[in-house]
Length: 227
Image 1: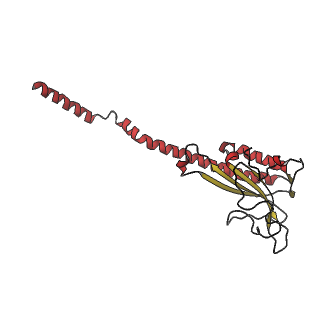
Image 2: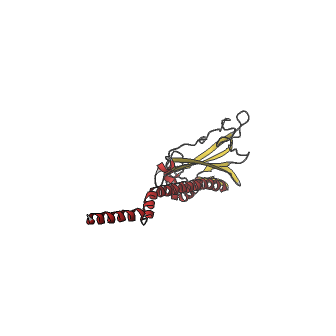
Image 3: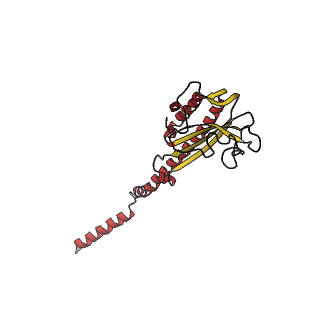
C-alpha cells in the first residue's frame, strides 16, 4: 500500500511539474505562427516585386517616347532600332521582351480641310513578343478623314499634335510573371502604360530607311520578337 501511495505522490508531482513547465512555450508559439509569417512574407515580396515591375514598365514607356522625340532633323529605321534596343536592355530585368509589347506611333495633323481635318498615325513601330495590337489605331488611320479628330489615348487623356509638329505616342502592354505564385496577387496581372512626347527640332517626320534595312530588321508591328 505504501508503495502505491508513493507512486501516486510521485505521479502527482510529475503532473504538477509538467503543468507548470513553460520551457517549450516559445517554440510552440513559433511553430503556430510560422505559417502565417511565411504567408505574409511571400505576399509582401510578391507585391513589392509587382510594384517595382510596374514602375520599370512606366519608366520605359516614358523613355521610349522621349528618346524617339529627341531624334532631330529626320527619323530613320536605324533610329527606331536604337530606341527599341534601349527599351529591351532596360526591360531585361522584368522580362519585357518576352512578356510585353511596345507600340510607338507618330501622331500628326492630317493636313486635310474640314470636315476631314483631324489627326493621323503616319507610321507605327513595335517591339516585344506579346501578341497585342494598339488600342488606339494602326498606321494610316486618320490620314484622309476625321476619325482621329480628338487624337489618341485613354478616355479623358487624349493627345493631339500641334500643326507642323508630331507627337511620339507609346503604348506599353506587359504581363507580369510572378516570382512566387500568381495566386498571391489574385491571378495573372497585365498592365498598360501610355506616354507621349512632342518631337524636337525635326524637319521631316516621315520615317526613312537610308540604310536599306530589310523588313526582317525593321521593327514592324507584324513581327513579334523578344530581341
